[in-house]
Length: 450
Image (tube, rainbow, N blue to C red; front, side):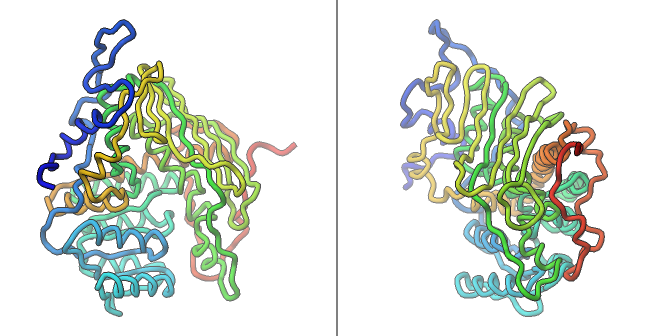
């Protein structure tokens, strides 16, 4: 409705006041003696990015897109992009296996009138090159994460804008590759968005702004969780080679996924690093495997991340059926705290200073799906001709997850400096869709046997 039209900046400032019970903070907090305690920003405006999140991307020239990785996330991401913007043409598809490509191709044709011709459908481990070389403007990269650095590097070399599904690196070698490619993409004025969708989720974005403005004071610590039941797995079928089985069952193999602390829990670790604006300097952890059916990774982790200023973050993740679920983040500050469960900020006495107004957001916006909004932001940057990079920050979050994983695997305290310089490389030397040497795919055991 016309009378409800306000811009994003106005909405963020006004929605903090609407529909909130308890004490509401705007530019200042109330101290116990009733005097105003002016908020001190954690970072000045302009030093951090806040996305504009309209319902749909701006109109502009037709953009040709390719999809590399036609599994569950790839099939969802390409639809998210089509819902985010008009003038998008899907011109090429690539996957390791023909059945997964066929499913996406049929869905695009039947439901979205996007007909990808036979000569633009590519199968095999090198399909990514053929998709990127097919005359596209933008590419969605959603294969198993171990391949992300190589695919991103090739797309950037060819001048193609990239969407990188998280995680974007599973080892230090991949991390360094992503950082180097991100700098090349910036130099080429490319737009790179990653699948850490909380950066495009309205309550998270608004909370991020409030925290940067100083509403909870200096950050002193936090807790992040992703505890759930067992994730999916694929039992080996007759005729599947070693390589085919592992790639189809990728989420359970540490070389393909990075283990679930990197593949899934990176979301929560990333939120804390986003709010704080720093990376951890060391990690001490433990983990275990109790219930997992396939693969070679753990099903639980507990990590103590320490930061250079003495801040500690407790990170916990688990994938075991019959256990309690908990997915979210909590950040403590000197003046208050924020949690993602209620999307609210409280002072030290428990009074609500700010709460995200879901009803106001629904009234103001038609699109509130962060999986769509991340593509809105991507297309807007491309059509405006603005360089944009989310790869570097996401790579840092991924390496933090790798630190926690390796600390649990080894039982040693792992430092950022050592891990970022490590030669650890998870890519198998004999990778192929066929028989492979499976002797190296074992479950890690920390410490020394007695």
